[in-house]
Image (cartoon, rainbow, N blue to C red; front, side, top):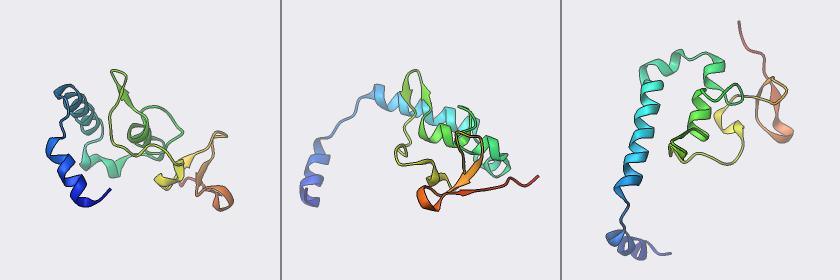
Length: 107
């Protein structure tokens, strides 16, 4: 699709207030749970994917509010996109495939 075609389609694009309200509700829930000035203070388990459904990375990728994904659009791929994650065998890891590495958490 050309840029000109996209611009023309954008002129008539509409989105329902219900969808916008749902996304805004999710955004507000996220920034309430993870205020920007507190993100650097998260523990590893509060950050990484694979620990629980309340971790920062889980919220970014999977969290639903009222059965709707809160909408950050980073789902898909693998957990290595977060830099560090916890594997199914409860080991911190980075990378994926042949580049997968076990990492030790600092105390």
